Image 1 (cartoon, helix red, strand yellow):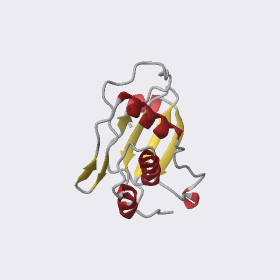
Image 2 (tube, rainbow, N blue to C red):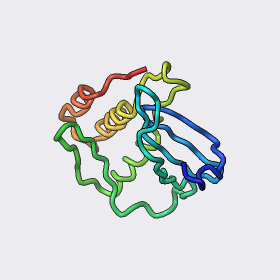
Image 3 (cartoon, helix red, strand yellow):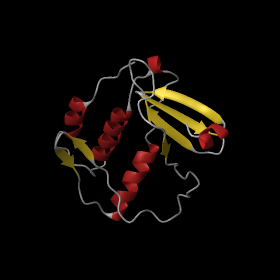
Image 4 (tube, helix red, strand yellow):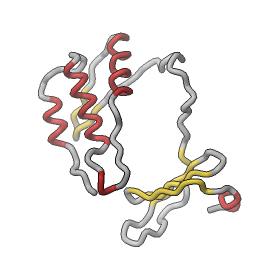
Length: 145
């Protein structure tokens, strides 16, 4: 770390999937790659862009929103009405993301969350029922605890 980094206090440190993540007392975060075999750093620290959690749900939504699922070279998309866009946003926000207290307790990853969201979109007629959920389930990576 640079001299500036060493002057800040680390408030949280996490290692997962070959990356080390740190959060600093000033609210900033950084990440770097680690050698999976040795745990030694193999890249420099890179700042992690923060997400503004203070944005109100009443603020103007972005002009264009995309929900894209890519499975190999297939892209599933559809032009949506404003009402459908709002419903997609509601569904995605309402679907609880996967979480676990530790690696051994992991039962689902982000791909599973995506399938749950797409399944809801199919149920509401926003995504066509062309076997898309089954296809996506076939591409899910295994859970590695």
